[in-house]
Length: 624
Ligand SMILES: [Ca+2]
Ligand SMILES: [Ca+2]
Image (cartoon, rainbow, N blue to C red; front, side, top):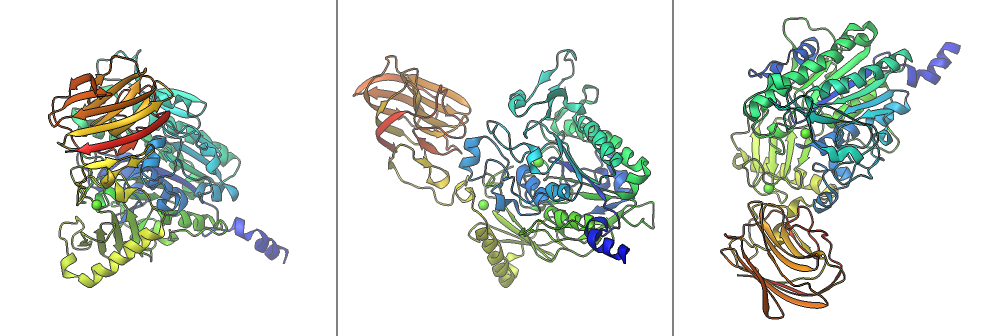
């Protein structure tokens, strides 16, 4: 009776799905393609350490991540929810850039982190590697990683807290004087160590192993993230394993990463208690960068909702948890189960017998039998995807699908408004080559509605306005603009090949600030004050040409600036020409939008300050 009572009382915590609470290690690689492990078909490089894990475990062929780009994919696998719920819909960048794309500045720490649920239930939780869910560029007030349910962390340049930053060496460079990249991340948390980028995966492994030892000695189960970033560009293999060109450099880094994993895998495999009760999961956060990794048989790359962007080569290893393979010479392969990163969260919670946080509804479904190689069912709900707001055009495709769904054997993609539908039969055509939309109008209508309803049920981002090739360009020739105005996407004036006339009247309180800017550091134009002088700047192919007024300006100024169709620039104050220059060519249409009294995202001109202080009383912009 006492025993039964004890069981009833402590049962929730002591008896899991597996009998004892398992340890979890999640190896989440950065920008690696589906076809890059040799056990997934890579013939250009071998990945023996990972292949051995696959051979001793299970390899999944229809596993997805929930976004084709870093930060949202990381948010999904950490929270069990679609990342759009947290407004993490593209990679986190600088403050203006995040705002311009309609994103949060960092993942809200209130999100239902898997790590926090496990920690509350007594797990030791550690994050080692790239984070990229907050704290990067000029966003230096994001919460530290330990606010998200981790006992310990060591990260890279995209996360708050202790970090490893990369030294780099090229062939021929003196090893005593290596170079440094991402040095400005030093301010993002105390505890910075510099180490060769070619050894950084091992640097994270060397932090994870002692963490595991401490947990094991304390008889605590553990959850460890090992999230290496070295197969993400730029590629820095060891000097003696250098390669010619992007692809070879990438493959060399991939081999090196695999080798460095070996230390962790062996450590777990060689310890009987750990081997029996540890589940290691290995996959990538999104598809490959073009020219680096490969998507195997799939279409598309990182940033695309085609399979190449979102299918991920998942391996699950756990000899004490996954029934052994009858045929030892081949890996166990699950070709059927369609599931995704959000499903891992409730699945791991069920394996650990840890309750869901109160009031939380996961988008993921618990599939323990699938993950442990005992079943090949799929998740019940379809999987839905929305593209990153800034990725309507990428890698040569100028109008990528905005929404996508995987339901049963069907993959369907369309625009936000349901147009441009594409329907593929994933059983007959997993490479997404034959669009069957015209053949199945009723199915297309239904899936379109599911996609749009799902899209509308989530917080919006600025994706609908960030279109490289809008269907209809505004022909509008005259804009009367106000201070603070911000026109982006299709709203921004179409200036390519046109004569631009800016007619402005302003009174400035300072000697610096932007009056008007359209574009960024690759293409665009801007009128601004610098050191009390008035400047008209034009960017063509990254090059800046400036017309600078010689006299200092004071009080109320009326200026007319023109940029001709061949790039000739003039500037007049009170009817008198004060400067001229020649940008030697037409304006091209910039990706960044137009702002009055500021220049957001990338800068057009060379400014000492971007925000205008004072009053812009008139600003008209004419395009001819
Ligand atoms: Ca990535
Ligand atoms: Ca599109």
